[in-house]
Image (cartoon, rainbow, N blue to C red; front, side, top):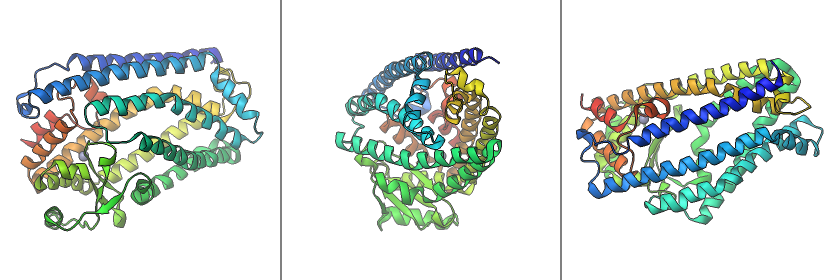
Length: 410
Ligand SMILES: [Zn+2]
């Protein structure tokens, strides 16, 4: 295959992916005004419904603008040999391949983050603000950004450096060592995410004694689930949107409830949400997801190892000296149709798991409280009650509210 052909394929993939994505969102937007299904008629009152309608439309328009901007920028970068330019800058600082790779990705990541920051700023402080969701301050927004950069440099940079080193030392076998590294890192992060990363951004406090805690404990006892770590996280310092999640496993497992969730829901509704989370744990979803994503990582790395040494990838991007980092950029785009497909399969499985966790909550607790909590959460985040089938199939990790309620009422 010639470098020219590879280049054309890369550009074609970027454009086709964009067109399909925009078409799906367009289809979805066409159904914004669909009649609300009977089962969901009590989610919004008239005024809230109008508010949710304009929220959807505003987000749709905004995402059209940002994604168009970003594809134009990406195409320009590919067409005007941006990667060769950045490669040249990186090489002017060092002869060491690891350092060159780090500088190269540092410039690309930081550059694209700085360019897109005005958009995320607008999203937060104009759109989310207008609908009453945003609670973050501008200061906090930028502190979060800096912390995010610090983490990326430390963790991302560290892992990247080791991978390039594996590549230098073991050649084609680097994928196996990288796979092991990512596997160990994933398990480590799953266990320590809550105690190492979360505290950098949020405060977690043990749930205080009271009605809620005893309700949760009596549920946990009833289903024989050992649960001694229930934390409340101060999500309200950034957004009014509510959430709850499970993290870690074994002795490290904990349930984290957003303070906004505790404000918005009644005690039994919170227990129902928790029962759903316990369902995920009992049905081994945490392990299955980790196992599958590891398999997928191994598969991707193996395919990468077949292509990475091929200088055509670098030549396609007009870079003279073949390198790991340029190969990685070209591969990232060429592989994206496959990751699109695996993403769809993972979403399909995730929706199956959501039904299973809902069923668990229905059988071990009750359906009524889960239904009313799901309705409240949808209402409070002004979510779309009539999404199009195609977008659910491609992008939704959870079934729609209607699907979940229909299932719970069975
Ligand atoms: Zn779930």
